[in-house]
Figure 1 (cartoon, rainbow, N blue to C red):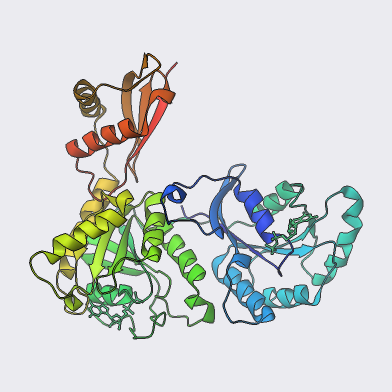
Figure 2: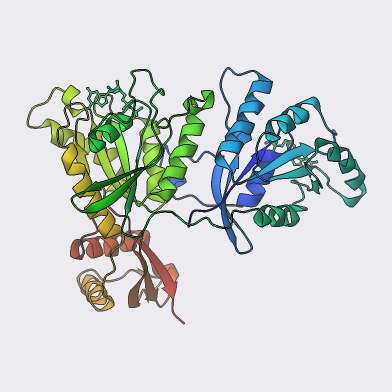
Length: 436
Ligand code: GDP
Ligand code: GDP
């Protein structure tokens, strides 16, 4: 199932980010705890009643150098490209403005459902202010108040009514879906070319100008793969595609549809902040991860170089200690043929189920070697563990008091589990529950 996407558009200051934050709520991001990795608050998953969806605040995507009207025009275009339902947001206190009419004009061009929201209607007396907005031609406006959290239920109900009915992922269970993410120019398109063994992707030297077709299905050694389209890799040529936040947005959407994410680094340039941020998203999404160091041909090396790079990567990507690292060159194709088998293994591990009996033996053995922590005279007791999910493998550990579980002990248990079962390439999750 791919989640439906809502995009919020509208001129500045109507309250888009206020509403976005209200809808998303206070999500604690694991990635935010990793130094140097912060989340851009423009894209997030959210829930409303029984609906799961993703939401984009297009106002957060600033297209540098573009004049004001051009900015909002392109933001509207992004919404049209990326969303299933568009919330067109206006400000009831100011009435319909020229900029609102410009946005409306853009939105007339799409067949996608549009829900018109009139914000800053902070109390019922102000409702008459919204009648002006019928003139925009999108039917009944929905009065809302971001500051007071009013009207959001009705607004989201209306959005949900318009979610696409048939949003099934089009590929079968056995197909391994993977994406290549990384900064512009690290060689993602070149690697895709190298896999496909043909120049289906046009590669250029200018940052952000690489283009490609959409998803690429591919078969190798009896296994079907689909390479999921990523930012900067599709045949479109829109101006905003070069903006960093838009490429992050595309990367996030590609990550979401993938089983395995290849984090591509450029050996020639060292590790940069943006690399960590991108990798953090893949980790947080619970996807299998393979680190691909490309342009290995361009590095002057001796027998120690690979170890040195490996240490550097491990130091910078502490949270990806499970990810295999592979050094390749899209240019010379060196070791490119090793990537797919590594992807396949990571994917198998990502979907692996382990037997409860063996799992519990491992945990008992771990506790015998390294007794569970105590706090103020109370000792953590582990009763039972069981795997509750795959992709990523997720375990629930039932204990006497979950507060007694320390991060370090959880880490220890995770490592013991990893030593026993081959979980290379996949994150695993431990959830501690108090059993009454
Ligand atoms: P954006 O530029 O469209 O993302 O707008 P913001 O979310 O940054 O909001 C712009 C300003 O409007 C901020 O000062 C908000 O506090 C204010 N604001 C947002 N929603 C409401 C609302 O429902 N009522 C009132 N009175 N102010 C609001
Ligand atoms: P993308 O933006 O990540 O898709 O990167 P591209 O595939 O467009 O590659 C950017 C530039 O790096 C192009 O000039 C490629 O020819 C070059 N490039 C890609 N892979 C390699 C490689 O393995 N070695 C070298 N030396 N150059 C490469």
